[in-house]
Length: 310
Image: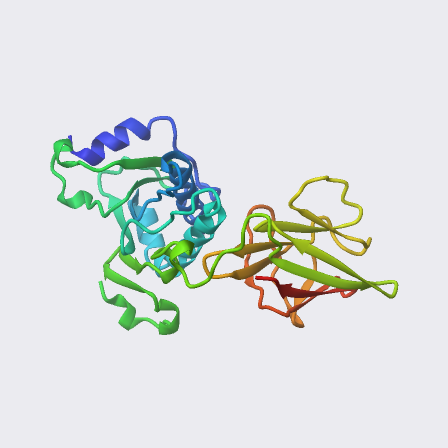
């Protein structure tokens, strides 16, 4: 019995999460499970000030799922990697030493030729560095920590594909992908030319006019939720806009100290500099860059002016 057989025997028996589409894996499930695994790894392995996260993912699918998903991987995986960066930003305050342990993210997808994995289900093994199961002949050859989460060719030249969407990663072979790490994970904020604000300093000002007077909301937290005045929650990371024409919540702002940048995710009708912002639902946040001196229009009624203070 080889190492992958042992992994499957240990984990496939009672812990598989089915795809929401009965009997077939879909892109949304693949995306969610990889992000969930990445975040769970951070929560489990990070220590002190050091954020620890996986850089390599070996994913085994049923043969039918592999065949149906393989052409979409080039489109799904860039979104997965972008999600990894969002998760790192989410935990950056708790673990400020978040430099990547490797120079690239690596994905290897394989089909289960022995048909031990049912359609709609998958096995993910994550490691700090590349782990190629095809080169392993016995369990004694594994000397790296492996996080296993059981869960639910140049053919591109022959297809009509917009090559612009393929910038930023290399496909090494069928089912094998490599994404170079972006600069933001190559150094910590303390090594950056930008000096991060102290925890108690104000980092941004949001102003708006109300009955002839100008109201100001100044934030200190790196993630703040903006809501209408009917919101009765009393939390430090909730900013109340004094209007009934603002949703509960309406939008969230996220600050990234490593590059002194802001992003916005909207839950209610929002225009940023006259451009409609895509709406987020639940935990599926769609982040939009928030430039300095921007205008934010809520429900075509309340207009806020955003200004960085650091």
